[in-house]
Image 1 (cartoon, one colour):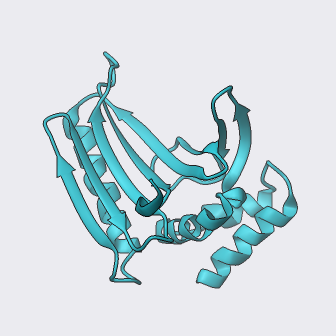
Image 2 (image 1 turned 90 degrees about the vertical axis):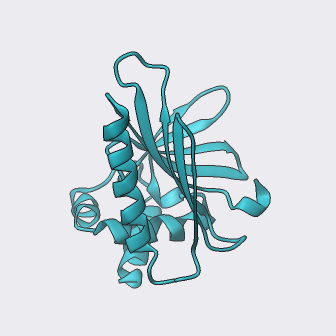
Length: 171
C-alpha cells in the first residue's frame, strides 16, 4: 500500500497544479486514515509539497490549505522558513470533555497507524489546562504531536490539534 500512496503523492507533485482534478480527489478520498498518515510521514522530507493546496502568504510565514485532512476538516501546511515546515490540523470545541475525547481518538488513530514500526516512543504530558501526546521515532523522522488546550475564545473554549513536524533533535 505504501507504493500506492507514493504514486498518488507523486502524481500530485508532477501535476504542478494547486487544485485537484476529480480523479485525484477521488483517490485521496478513498485513502484510509493510516494511508494518509503514512503519506504525511513520507511527504515530510519534501516539506509536504504534495499536500500543499491554496497558498495564503503573510508577512511572517507561508500557509497552504492541505489537500487532505488526517484529523478534522481544517488542516494546513505552514512554513516558518525553509527549515521549519509543519502539517497541522486543529478543531475547536465548546468544552474540555469534547476536546479530550477527540484527543484520545487522534492518539488512538496515530497509534494504530504507527504499528508497522514498533520503535515509536509515545510520551504524554498533562496539566490542568492542556494535554500533549507526542510520538517520536528517530532524529530524521518527523515528530507527531496531539495537543489539547484551553483557548482564549468565549464560545469554543478548547482546541485539539494534530501536528506533524520538525524532529526533536533540531527543535
